[in-house]
Length: 498
Image (cartoon, rainbow, N blue to C red; front, top):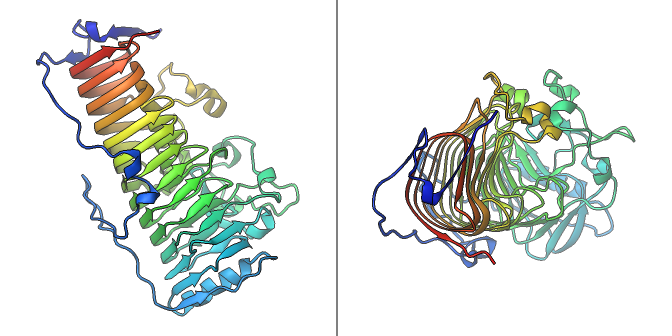
């Protein structure tokens, strides 16, 4: 039987095994300067990329260069222009590269395939609208869906094993509408139950070739196995699935994009998938699922591939709506490490800073750092969901009994947050950990919080919470198997309940 301990801030100095509080007198402190909603997001995109100062070693980022040769596409408004666009990209790449420019107006296309040393330029006033028919995204290509490798439709804009590619301009991309894509999406269950980990990749075919065959929907922009990827300025609407998803890439810059996928199930904004050396800045996401998301493969298939997501910087970004402002997981098999999120605003998302995994997912996350974040939320500010739901993982979603550790036991550790302003939330901290693999080393310093409820921790080991000004409806701290915690300099105002 679990033992739950409830404390209030007033009673926090009572003895609690494994928990400590400081006896220091209160001292004055102030938050660092935290940006407002008017100072972040795509409307504030500067021309140049400022130097990156991260608390871990990373590359320095700069805009890519392309040959001056420019091809101005001649497209027709009453046809699907896939061939014209892809032929121009391929031919220009073979000549050494350059710019392929989309004319102003609205143009229909199927899957666009980028090639090395080509910048696909979509100027303001130009719209690429993607077909809603499966046939316009065939044949199947190699990709990864929800952390598992497959042969499927890929992405509306796709690339495989290319170098120095870009999508730029102030134009608009509109995802598939009409047709049969959305009707034929596989909904038979979680993907690891659909595809056996031992099935060869070439046999994992979901291309919709058979009339009744299901598909995995195309992502919006997804290069795989690429280096030096650059996305700037474009707007994305009505995706069929995740929006911008670099997979197995190195050196990626995403800046100044504007995404709207509100109302789209699984309509994630930016998913960094087993990719390293990434800069995301001055982007605005309003999403039907998580906004800025870090992933590294799922379960046994993710362990087989074993490519982490690492060395990622997210700065001066705005999340306007979504399940999580910034999320790590739930695909964690090859580990997410070295993530630095700073000077961002999460406004009207459900959770602010979110961490997910599941017992069958494996891997975890470490060295995750958050500084100077402003949040106005519908739900929790800091949330760890490490168990999931029975609908997806069955009895493994039950906290007890504790299971034996194995290669699929996930973990989170070494998470730092500093200078956090929470204008509104339900819970400040909510930890739903795993008893055999508790969350470790959580440190939050300098936080000003307006919340309904304060602190709820199941399976948390080692943490410190310093310099916090709290305004809440209650002062309850709930602990289940939480230990080695330090609370130091807490100022609390109990809000009057009317």
